[in-house]
Length: 136
Image 1: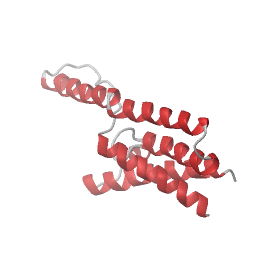
Image 2 (image 1 turned 60 degrees about the vertical axis):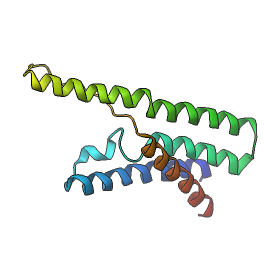
Image 3 (image 1 turned 135 degrees about the vertical axis):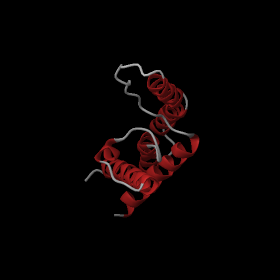
């Protein structure tokens, strides 16, 4: 099997699995929604882009492809910790405001972004997933 594809599968399953375990521990209950949840600990986006960066580095070294992957990772992680995180906070506030004023509108769906720590842990998951896939 393609090493990079295997690493991406490990990173996705690892980050989403970690998210489920983390949420179950935090809430003391399981929800099927947790499997596909966006936002939260750890960042699957960060895990996947760091898997690409690490895989390209291990396969090709410091090539143009590696630096393109680094730039892509920077953009994705910055977006997850900046714009998406702010939009998620605004969505939470709007939902609370609708409930407080008893407005009968359906609460808007919002996807949470990530804190820097969530992005860091996701990045570590991606790097470890890549290393594990090279050992297998």
